[in-house]
Length: 358
Image 1: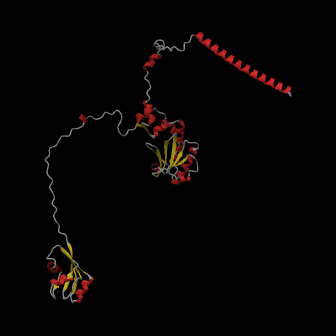
Image 2: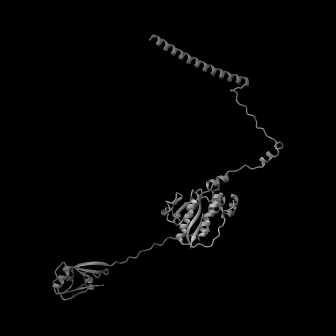
Image 3: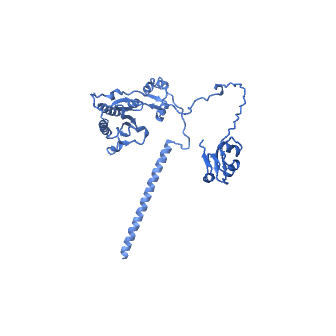
């Protein structure tokens, strides 16, 4: 047992000594490397504290560069104002200009779809924003460049074709696409094949007759032209900014037209005097008042009642007789209206009731 303990202790002590020797060796190697680098720096006489000296620029004469420097001086620096304007959308590009500036694949796709529409008998018309195709004066399809390439807009129900491909979109919720609510992204994967299928459906729906048409290479007619050339032709225009433009000088007061004072006599307004208009009046009278003004056997006409009871008041145009009082005389009474009690009392006394309709 003691022998085993001594052997284990000796093995552990040997492992510790070997590890310490390895660490000392690594430290010595690192120190040697650092000393070698410092010696190299001293041999090169590099002063890290001194600031780096700035040397003046060296100019090369024009004769030594064979005219390269001379051409560089005469060449104007490139300005990025036009590029910034194009990037910000300061220019309005027409559909034709977009086709001319597009790549060859877009032109070939345009030529293929246009030939397909014209073969079916649709009539073409190029507008500012798009190219329309009509069937008997009714809009059937449109070709326009939207997003990254050419797109086909059809006068078909989007719900019937949304499951055909991912290139088909529904634009029925937008007012500007009400006549052609179905969008087909023709430049997408499989978009050309789907566009041709939609053209077939359009031809069947509209019932256009296929005429003798010879296919043309429209891509060859759309040769590339420079931006400035299209701007000069009017295919590209500069957008007008709304509101105040920068750099515009404010209008000075001297430039404003002076208003010459006009001497006019002030006339006092004439006050209009409103004439008093006599309004008609409705009156109510009881039996005791009427029978007190008339004798037995008299005829109590409308005018006599107005004269005796109301004092010939010309405003009275309507008289109603009420039943308060005793009817003890034989009188014929004329009025516009009578209450039930008044009419009964007059008739019971032997008199008569006459209703005036005027």
